Amino acid sequence: AEKFDNLEEHLEKFIENIRQLGIIVSDFQPSSQTGLNQKLKFMITGLQDIEKCRQQLHDINVPLEVFEYIDQGRNPQLYTKECLERALAKNEQVKGKIDTLTKFKSLLISELGKVFPEEMGKYKAIHGDDPPS
Amino acid sequence: MTEIFSSLYGQPDPQGPAGASALGFGPGKPQVPQNLGSMSFHHQMVDEGAQLRKPAAMNEPFYLLRVLPMENDLTGHTNLITHYNLEHAYNKFCGKKVKEKLSNFLPELPGMIDSPGIQDNSSLHSLIEKPPVCNNSFSPLTGAMLTGFRLHTGPLPEQYRLMHIQPPKKKNKHKHKHHRPQDPLPPETPSDSDHKKKKKKKDDDPDRKKKKKDKKKKKNRHSPDHPGMTGSQPSSSSLR
Image 1 (cartoon, each protein chain N blue to C red):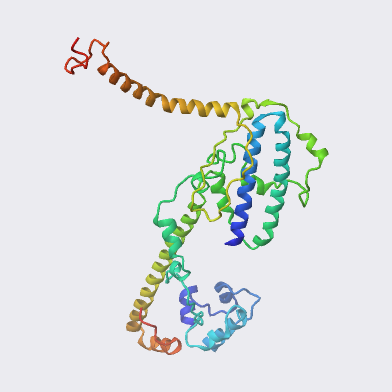
Image 2: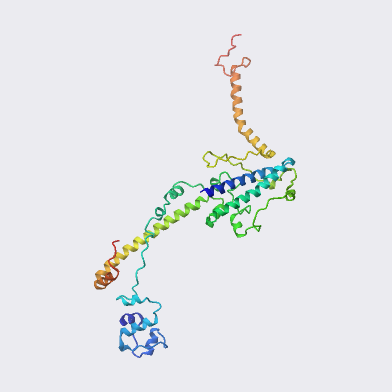
């Protein structure tokens, strides 16, 4: 978390510098030239600081789908929310399939045992008794 | 076994070669005499498909009986959110309502960030598809380079002006106690200052008007020169 805080701090300073640069440029005065030069130099150093943070974050992976949310002007936390919701829904779906197939297996074995008792006896000897569903 | 195959693939032909081809095994393949029975036929199948079938399956009384796969402890049967300790995250994102706009996630970011990036060619997707060609390092600007940034005085044309949205003041909850740089900000643009002044005037005008009206009413009620808007209230100078 510290490496994120470091990057966040540098980014905030950089953005603030750019914002002030925009204010200077929007109504430029001759006396503002030195301030403008200072802001431009700080912009370069800001980029250098941000690049230094890159080394600490080389193992961080960001899914590309998040960028689509940002490009649309949407909150990227919605992506996290939708991922969790989809994961839970898929989890429930798979659990339902497992439960259904387990019940089917036990029913099938019981019915086959009634029709083919000898064969099912051999089958159970090979695979052992199935655990109760 | 041959009875099962004959029921699946049709009646066995007593002639031999023609019968084998009718079953789909091809004329080039070795012919099996019918009198040998199921064992030789079974053996032929092993020779043809040995690579496809596991030897263990053939030793058991049930044909094509596979060994069951190893049971995996973690399946969809378990609640994976609790397994990976994501309950807090789930309650945080799915329990509460997450706001739709990007500005709710980044309230301190200036500019119009809620508009799509495609409109002003500032999308991250375009940056990934076509990364800008630049040097490996950032070199500082020299004096000669800075001469290129000598600007003309005066305000920008309307078409190049951006909507400067002032970010809200940082709350005390913020971890870092660094405050905004104390550098004196340059004088704001006339348009911005006028806009603010106009806003202030607009906000104050109805309040001011009301206050003025109230004051006037009070004065009129208590003034001796007034003929008396409300006759019910006795004036202080009724006795003359």
